Image (cartoon, rainbow, N blue to C red; front, side, top):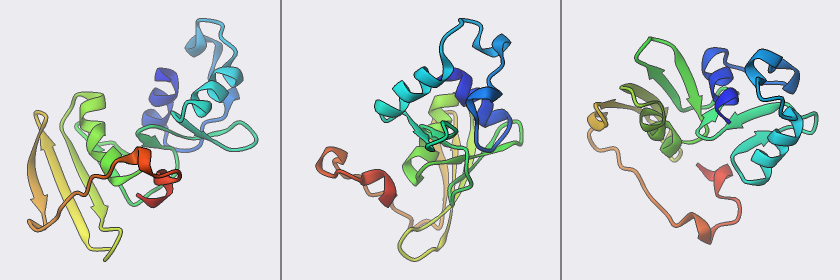
Length: 141
């Protein structure tokens, strides 16, 4: 999983199994088999050809949830809540730019030292649901 995360963070875009070099793999694992295992556990999203379109919480494809990292680079999150989790996954300050899934209004959230330090507009809210109650929750973020 960490190899895929590094790939998506460094070079946004779909990751193909052949993009993972022997030096990166290092352990000699079967890349395609490992990717399928991550997909089966719900940790990766893949196309039929084995290409990876996301590794939670990151999306290799553009989404409406963009996260600016401390070094100035940006990544995409799979959903709004995942965008907040990136600050904690990478242990760094981030600025999330997103939009409301209901009204498409612009939202900015800044996380500094693990705490939400700015929310625009101030009226923005996050809704949490018990994901186990829904079969296809990922497509509704």
